Every structure is written in structure tokens, then in C-alpha cells.
Amino acid sequence: MPTKQKVKVYSTPTCVYCQKTKAFLKENNIEYADINVAENEEAREEMIQKTGQMGVPVIQIGDTLIVGFDKEALKKALNLK
Image (cartoon, one colour):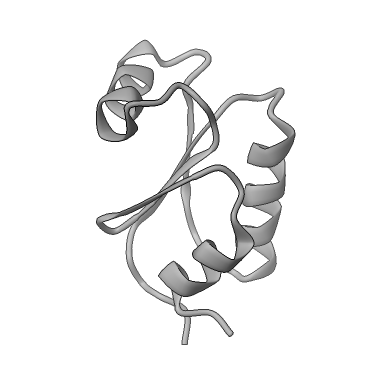
């Protein structure tokens, strides 16, 4: 059964891997908050503080942080088969 943890995706509109991440979440019926760090400076600072990086996407699932589109890490964190 998929996780009910809160999912956040820190992304930018032009990022291909951000789009792939969001498509993967939609395919698996995972609700998420999409945070555009290109426009939201506060969120960008929050993301950098959490990960020490400026790369997107950063996916936060509960306390788990995943940097980049990593399908296997996403499946594991979301309890997907």
C-alpha cells in the first residue's frame, strides 16, 4: 500500500527530471506539493539548507530526502512495488 506521508517536490518549470518525478508520482496516485524554487526564494533557501545542494528535483517524503529522479529510491520511500 502506498505511503500516506507528506510528499514535497522542490522543482523548477524547465527541469526535465522534475517533470519525470511528478509524472512518476501521478502514475502512482501519490499526492504531492509542487514547490517552484525558481520563483520561491524562501523555498529555495529551505531546500539548500536541507540538502546542501542547489540541484533539482529534491523530493521530501516524510523525513526522507531524495536528490534527483531516482525511481528505485522513490519506490522504496513510498512503499511501492
